[in-house]
Amino acid sequence: MQPTTKRYKTILWKGVSSQFRFLLVGCIFFLTFASVGFTDELGLVTEVEFQPLASATQRLIEALDYLGSPLSEDDLSAIGKVLVSEDQKQAVVDIQKILDPHCLVGVNINPESRVKVKEGPVNKELMQQGWRTFLVKVHNEAGVTAPLAAESENAAPLYKRSTGSPDPETTVLKATFRTVFWILKSMAIHL
Picture (cartoon, helix red, strand yellow):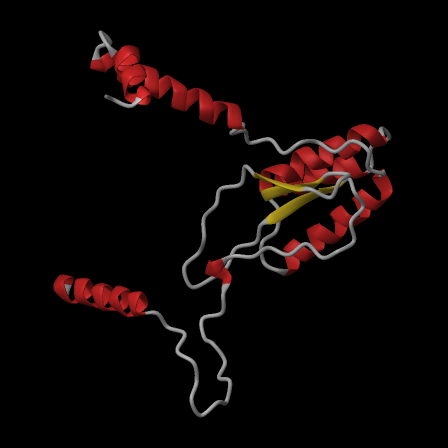
């Protein structure tokens, strides 16, 4: 006797061409990923006071200039016009519209202190033997004051400090040795 799931599967696919199956599966994947919300927009935050945002924007411009990653002349002139405008609510929106394209991620902390992260529209390119500056937009609805820390295995230090023990614990896995050997072997073949 066959399991019931297989019987339903054969009934469902019976008489359906492979091209239609492929199209159906493709549509399901498209609808699934389209509903996740791949959009370049980070939500606009409207309940922000203008004066603190304007001061923070000025400090951001100075910091980016100091770090060697200044904003473009177009963005600087647009921000300059916005900072002297009379309509403060519109100015808050305009500042975000100018700075959002430079954001790597948008972080939303809701009133229940749940954190959501959304990918920003900036081009995510790293520089070999250098570094890049990205902005992170944080909407802190909960008013949480704890530090916001990002963690990644790729951000770990390159070297591990010695414990000073005469008999240290082995922390390098055999798989790592195999990977390094494979990389060295593949480099030797191509040289």
